[in-house]
Length: 589
Image 1 (cartoon, helix red, strand yellow):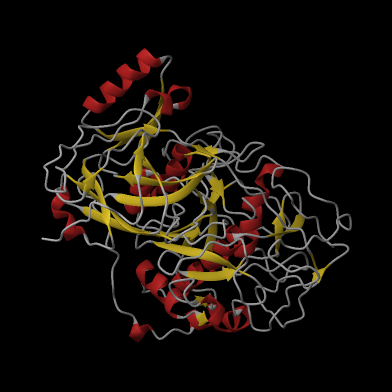
Image 2: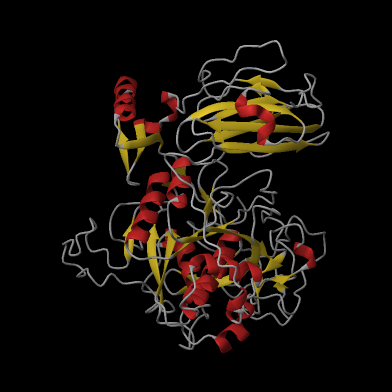
């Protein structure tokens, strides 16, 4: 039996976070360990903003229930807890978009598709509007001044390197439009369907008669011809300038080619269409967990196979995790824009350890990651162009945007082309092909799983005989998924804290503990070894930190599913971001 030191190289004092302790405190056995603490996954009443409760049912559907006052809320939560059709409840978390920063003029337009090394940053004026905020008014053409990136030395500029692109030229020579119909669910803000460069690329619900005010196909959505607006719960997939971000992503994926105007999208095929699902909106780009879940369910129920998610949060959301884990779609997710290592500071949903997720970093035109891009040797799969990407914006406009939100649509488009071209492969095969065919770059070694950038030409010429035939291992949710542990440093005044969060989609967490060193789940003996700690409202515990060293955190549920996470801290470690809200992944956050 492994012994645990009672004096740790990191000194931790457990502090209460967001309310009173949940569950009974473990008793000291006198042997240097504590008995397993038993917890019930719950929230404080104050966590339910405006009395809103998100209930996720056993059939996968969800509903938002609103209660007036704490007494009604408490009674409602008790009733939901007793309802066997309810899997679990949680707050209906707020979502918030991040600002778009595209501050540099570009003469060469779409370096991401074909980079000959001539691309450079114009320092005086730009040709196209530049969005500083996706929900504000962009700078007019020729009316902005260059401002260097904070990570660059004074007087220096990034120099384009020939060949740093997705190899679109070779891909287009190979691609014949494919033979399998593919629907891409774009869950984002809305899309300007009337844009001159987006004609005939949108999915159409053929079972719905436009404008008759009747739910012709009986799916619960009236006149959902091109998708649905889950932000406002209506069929208006475009409402104005707030939909710049979604319109930009749609153009990257499939803007019409050879029409004499605008840009070229990556996918050129009548077999590939975009389903518009507006889950974010308003002047601040807000949304909720419910809107995203509802959009995912709509997408799958209406035939989408690939889903683009350019949104992220520091908060691990169990309801969203369960929805993605239960889906058969391939999710292409932006890795985030904190310039952080998501192996140690995860961003969700990109950091969920699910087989059906591809996490994408932002590659600049010199072959390095953009300084704002997140990275992770385990948690980020590959990089794709995402710096100064020119694409469509509302009212027949075009503008440059930068961020992992621009990178994800590149990979989404590639996935759609591969899936439509090789008509007998699975979506698991698509992920394997994209990750196995990357162009490796020295600058990406150790920063992503593959150490490479998207190579669409290589993907479309992939030797299918080399496929492993592996299938996705879908976690059993609701009755056996393992807990998830995340940890991040935060600063409050002069003190640095380590916030440890444990998310358990099943709500049957039975033990949480920590111990010194790098350990395995077996070392914790089912939760009877190590030092138990209590989780507070929201599933977190806060520890004060001093010194340096490694700690391993452990969690176990009633089904025996175990998870460990080792955190290594160096002397002088400074605080990092605290938990945030749902935001789109566009630099800067």
